[in-house]
Length: 157
Image 1 (spheres, rainbow, N blue to C red):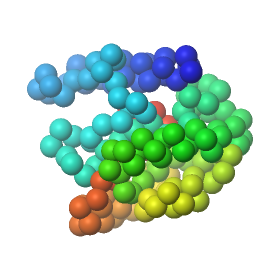
Image 2: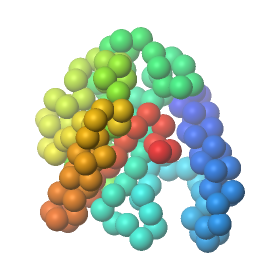
Image 3: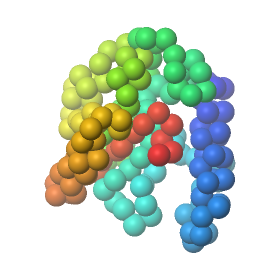
C-alpha cells in the first residue's frame, strides 16, 4: 500500500515538474496532494471523452518502473481499478502496455475488461501502425460519445 501511494506521488511530482516548465495556464498544473486514484484524469481540461491513468495493479509492481514477476498482479487488484473506472463512467479501455507488461497479470486484461462490459483495444506503442490504431480507438469513442481511458504503466504519457 505504501508503495502505491509513493508511486502515485512520484508520478504526480514528475508530471508537475514537467508541466511547470511549460507555458500553460496555472489551472493545468497538477500538485502531488491533488493526485486522483490511479492517476486518473482527463487528457485535457477541455476533454470529456479521453481520460488517462496508470495501469491496474500498479501497486503490485516489484520495481518503480512498473516491472515485476510474470502473473504477479492479481485479478482482485484489476477489479478495484475496473470499479473505479465504472464509477467514473468509462465505457472503453485503450491499453498502451507492451506485451511484457501484459504478462504481469494473473489473468489476461482483455478478458477481465470484456467481462465487465468495456470495449477494449490493446495497442503497444512500439508497434508499426500504433498511432493510426490509437487514433481509430479515440475516434470510435468520440463518435459513440463514450468515455475512454487510455492507460500505460504510470498514466503520465
